Image 1 (cartoon, rainbow, N blue to C red):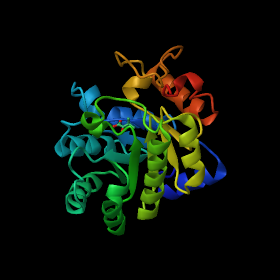
Image 2 (image 1 turned 90 degrees about the vertical axis):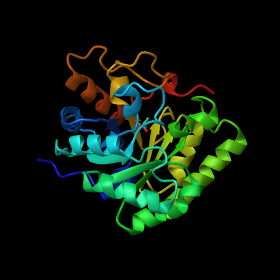
Image 3 (image 1 turned 120 degrees about the vertical axis):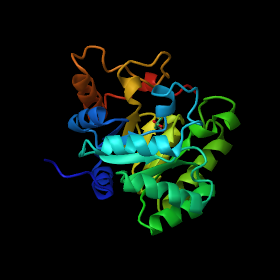
Length: 265
Ligand code: KIV
């Protein structure tokens, strides 16, 4: 059985210029399939609120739901690293974040993900100090959809781009192990990836990041109105296993994402 993926392995892959892959999974069966396909990371994403629970946004997702799905994924004993989302309002202060992260880590997460930049520095610092690795999510942060007034590309104006870059540097300095960038222009994502030492995972952020992530249901063609950056990997595949393997291969050989997959400017 291959060794479990660690943060040092992901850092080494960045240094070697080898792309890595993250896919969401919310249960034991899909966690096993994603791991067997060779994805380095499984994200137990709060996207489960939309794809499993039928909500319009990720805002209603509870910590109990994230704990339940993290436990289910962990029971598959995947080789992939398990990253679990801290849901809406469970990291509004460092203390709240510590309590919520403790639950996720004790149920099998190896890292927690939270959405936001500079304002989270102290929280990230405290989590890392206490043994909890952190992935920070910048750009289009879905838990803030009600502030943004909808899902849109972030970092289009020079002011927004500068602020996302500053946030990225700050969260790295605070101790985050990974940055995830969603729906930002390709050039900005590539620029941030080359400036940071920590690995950068992109979604709708072009080909210049160190890794790619997609929501499982999107890449399996199960989403009613997929975003522009999604490719249906079931097309031409004989099975779910084939589709997952095709996604992993496409990221690693650089054939995904293409220009048509980037968010529109
Ligand atoms: O919750 C999730 O699945 C995510 C991805 C969209 C990156 O955050």
